[in-house]
Length: 353
Ligand SMILES: *Cc1c(COP(=O)(O)O)cnc(C)c1O
Figure 1 (spheres, rainbow, N blue to C red):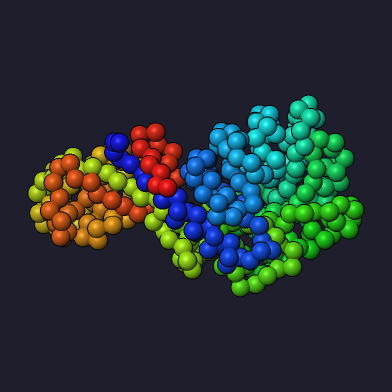
Figure 2: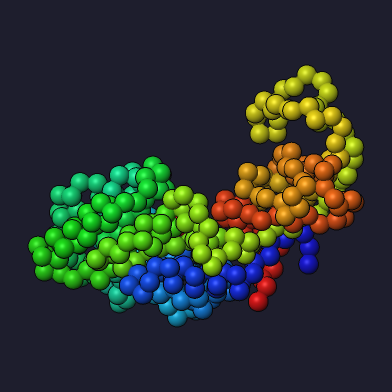
């Protein structure tokens, strides 16, 4: 197998899911979010083995990859009207906030003779998707219950994504109140109340809101971190995904470039700290495949200098290892680098069972 390579330890992922499920308790069902690994079905199976109740993704291409796994699937991103065919085909439930889209989903579901369920999103202040005004939500519900192709099954919210708003008891109480009010006013039963993403774990592991019964989790299953404060959760590991890259040049060079400094490959004027002559190691991977701010060398003696689209430059001066051309350097990654490396077709993926 070639390099660069991402290795995925499926046992780590499975154990992370089990630990998070234990922390949240039986009343909260987990929708395992697969978008960070592009809906790879083998990794999704590790989620299922760990105990998730749904799989969820923001792209229909990824949901399609999961089609043979027998578990309910959720479309996370508000559907484009142009993709309702695939949404109805590959998702059982979708998160929504626009009547026009829900009407199109309803028509498509009738055409295909499939059932499709709707969770309406409520914006509690983070200012991404969802109904912001309560009255708009009630008006929408009144319309949706008339559609014959879809069934309204729940409410959901998303926090700490755009606005960085941290979930509180008040947010969960408001969600629960809206659910009750809709049930009473429209004589429907909402089976799903989805209280957010990995940023809601911190709150819900200490406090059990009466009717929130679902979380949509990606980061916390992959890395074991809750996303409000970045804390590592009990019984989880953050090294299930690792990056391996090969060294293509090793040379002693100064730490400050010579000559007049203009712009770098990405149009920014770079600045440098003079550390004298260093052992510089170039690796064959770049910004096309990863994000330099979210990779962490397992060898703590290595410093990341930077790089460009296809080159990563490391400082190996302080390492105990005498790196040579052809050697492999290994990194732990955080969310953005996992996302980018799993998306990059230039990176080999190896699953460890
Ligand atoms: C990506 C996404 C999630 C998962 O977020 P994590 O922070 O990775 O847990 C949940 N809900 C929606 C709507 C998303 O787009």
